[in-house]
Length: 573
Image: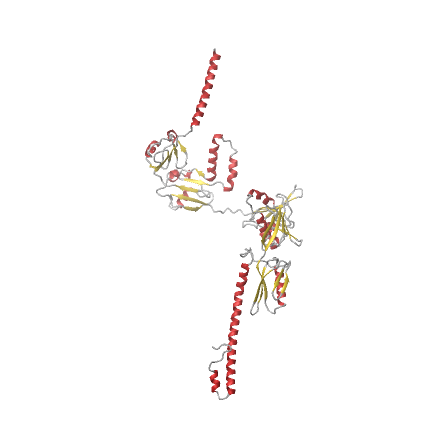
């Protein structure tokens, strides 16, 4: 294909052989025109391709510029920036795009004076403008220079800002955040523990820290009240606005019992909340995170105390009617209480666990106070051939985890001897975590004694161990371990099978630990059964000082006895 300004090689030959010079000139001019047309076509094709490349790379350029801007990686956002709430300020990075052919894009930073310098356009003042207003002003100024039909301005990266916090806060002072951070972010940063602080320093501040009467002061002298519980309930930006450089946040103290209202019953976050002027019943329900699915919303109880606290008035209110506007909302006063009653729904996940020697060990559903033990055994497929009914048991959890500390303190109110304090505490700990249900599985399942067929409760654990054929001997014997069970044999037999006593064995203190109850008994108090344990303790190894102490105490007692005897003899003379 010919290129621009190229003449065919045979043009000269054509002219030399032409009989007419005019015809030669015409031929040369025609060839030059053809070359020019082809060159223009190539130029236009390259230009169109170049325009396409610019448009396709424009977004990549914008993203790369934002990523390379001061501050490093992109800022984490809770949501898209609201142009009506975000105020433009120094160091904001803004992209100005003029969508013509080819498109023009300027990646610009707002100056410390609050202006945006746009090449070929000029300086645009953005001081104290929201992002929405700043966009309009930028577009207006660009269109004075360019006749492009579409001009846009986009915030690429929000700026860092310096703000301060004071009042009832753990660490007051100056903090560097981003312009998309809200007041709650500043409070979180100011309440972070330092190396020299502990949760005990923060706890009293959190209890007395106002969260609904927070004061936000701007550099222009304006003030804003921040209400965090209401913001999280309603997601209204004005209740927890974006921060701006130079802002001061003041955290007041609040009275824990005064200037409050209460929301209780079937709400998602029942409790006592700080009162704010203008609060109403529906605000209170929203702050308490709404009602539960069991709430009877058309029969809530509203209570109000008189100003002197001597008279309580109560009325039934319809929350559903208030929400639809059919009933008038009620303004709140300090001390008001709202109780949202709930339906009496007894449906729960009642179940028991069956473990061990049954055909199908698993978790099975039960009916509250109606399902018996024998029914569960049948549902689990019955017992296996290896089931040891003599050691089977039911473990019941009566107390919730959060109730155990209180129950432990209450249990200490009883009279317990000093010697038994440790044992009482241990037994209580076992009782709180796993209470045993007294059931004789042999009588129930073998002998058919229906008095042993107890009702099961939710979270009961039925454990049916595997039948053991050994006695475990441990402690001061030569070879501790399992010894085959022999009917009618005593502890001496099993100790001998385990290699006999060691030199340090305390032979008079041997104990039998029952496999089911884990009781410690003397050999003469029980019969050895399969699965039992035999414990042989060691003789105490006392230092020489111990024996010297015993000897001195014995000598002291002996001297007292001799003295008394001498005194008696003298008196009798």
